[in-house]
Image 1 (cartoon, rainbow, N blue to C red):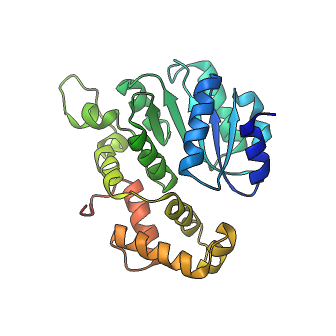
Image 2: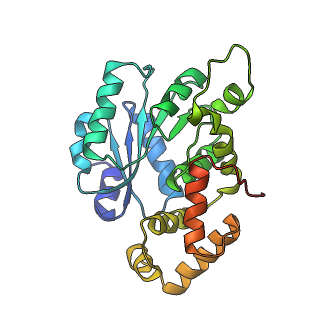
Length: 244
């Protein structure tokens, strides 16, 4: 059994979980080790293909990263992969891992409801910040910043989701949450009380309150309800931008 497999067994099924679906063993292992350092205490399930998705049934899946493997969004195999994911984990946000910065594919992925597009050219710190953004309910498509907002005459017409992309991506600059803050944000959005959050994350009530204070300061929110409202607003592309 690999070290990664042993780690997954030790962490247990109740920890928040990220699924990485990547054919390349080297790429898959690298992503897992990177995320283990960023999301301490989380569970990581790495799969070669969606055929092994049943291994993750019962886990608290917070994110699924699927390798495009050079496929276009109209690829039958990609559509089959997405259907398999949706059938098992309909609430989990899905992101694409790509070997290219193809803005056309990124735009198509956005319209399909994909929540993030991570290419191998991204700096590690930007990729991790994008990961936190998706986990906090946002959308991460850096490939489209220039392509969508440039307003070139050669650009195809944009739908409403694409028109608000610049607003949502700008949120990345203010969504610099720590991994633990991201955990608490996820529980907040599920309506959990401080006591429940403390129990689920194995934290003291004082620590939860401290993290909440940091979150509220970053979002310039006055209370828990306003925190969730601002996250929803930003994920939906609201125009009430917060100062950095």
